[in-house]
Image (cartoon, rainbow, N blue to C red; front, top):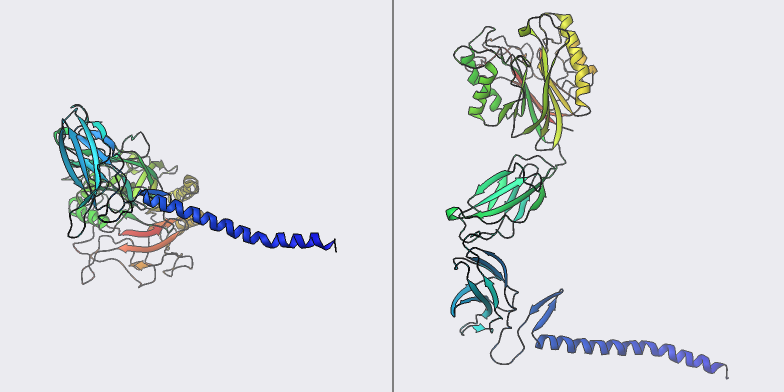
Length: 537
């Protein structure tokens, strides 16, 4: 029996522990309730870690807790920015500024206010009280807070506050929108966007409203931004704190529109340049192009123009669509082979021109080149190589040697970047097809899938949508484009657009025809412009 007693005591001790725990929990709840009641009676409530001033629990007329002393967060000339902590159940606040026993009162809906038009270099005492508006009764007012002393600045200090809450409202792959709170007495705002904190060579916008949008940016690129207020008499605030932001880098390929255009040199016969230049410029600007390879854009001066043919074309483009530039304006730099680009779509990184090793003639004005450029597509942030060329038309052996040099050097030049090669090869599927094969053997793709001695596209054709590709690329200034076949067959091509492997959404043989199938106003050149829309990988 004596052996069982200890066992019985252990059982009783074990079963009593849950009761003890329950008693302790009940005691803690009672203690916590007393603390919460005391806190409410004291006018303090804790919500999600935030201490809010609450009204004391009283009978009869409700009351409001006294706000804490206001904070003067910024002074600028004769302006103050004042803020305070919210008071629970208040509808608005009354801010009082006292100077030499004179009091100025302001009604404020929120918990921050800008106070303009004070006196320079003057001491003020700032107080705030909470107000609750009851239906049918006089407002309930708290007692005023303790006063916060402050002083306005001297005459030589900025007279405007810094725009508060400057933020990046939105950003996509090519634009950033900055927004901020308005500043009392500001007439305008100045916003800067730059690539580094020193704000070297910033983009600057002067805005009347409180937002500004920077466009034409590179995708996936970091930027910094800042804003300041501008006022009358040249007053301006200090800059806001620097914002750090970046454009996004889209996952899907962004469309890039490229073209090749032999515009016919002005001294080579045919209609004069002055009668054709408007149609050529309109063809380029009306098709949403980003980069164009030109051939026969002469550096000599057409009659009635007063400048070189390629310079005059750039003037025609600028009059229709600002933003067009040329990669190389040198005389004898690449003769008629030029690359032009739309700065709103792409950014030039570097460019050059290469003189072919094999030439038919020693005449410098008949030398052959290829022009190259490395661009960044702004909408995707991706780099790519673009090359334009015009091969020798009078010698097959020289033409093939130039094609092989182009294929070999372009493969090295791109260094793994996607590339587009365009130009007048003076070679078709029926004549000197070896020039075409030189490029496809080096890894380039002909989106049309032009095959030797055939109008039938090959199975390697990558174009997804064909537009007038059954026409020949050469029209010889005829009244209508040349065509011996119909869609979806390939016309006879001597002009080409080659790409490294990538998506080709559209390929167009550009012709502007009237209802009878004739060139509207005549053919602008003896070659049609070829346009392709690609997606860089």
